[in-house]
Amino acid sequence: MKRSKGLRVRTRSILRRRKKERSRLNISRVIHQYEEGDRVAIVLDGGQQMGMPHRRFNGRTGFINKRQGKAWVVAVKDGNMQKTVIARPEHLRPLE
Image 1 (cartoon, helix red, strand yellow):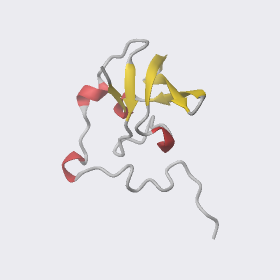
Image 2 (tube, one colour; image 1 turned 90 degrees about the vertical axis):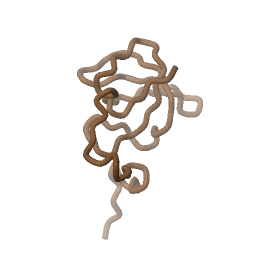
Image 3 (cartoon, helix red, strand yellow; image 1 turned 45 degrees about the horizontal axis):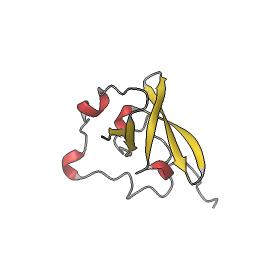
Image 4 (cartoon, rainbow, N blue to C red; image 1 turned 45 degrees about the vertical axis):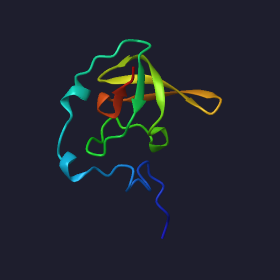
């Protein structure tokens, strides 16, 4: 059998939610408005699949570049390279 190589492969523990958090949408994270240059943390929400960045960016911090539709473009440093991640606000948390 061919090995699976999808985007969500080996994410059982990363995308798991606690029992109290299941089927809950954190509305304050969804309606939060970011400005260009704001610092955010990428924290994947397993309950929302749309607009989820790749699992390698889970726990990374970056800066908001612009808005793209309902999502935000985030600049993240990956080693020595600067990468752009497109993520919906359910997967972002503001940092001060």
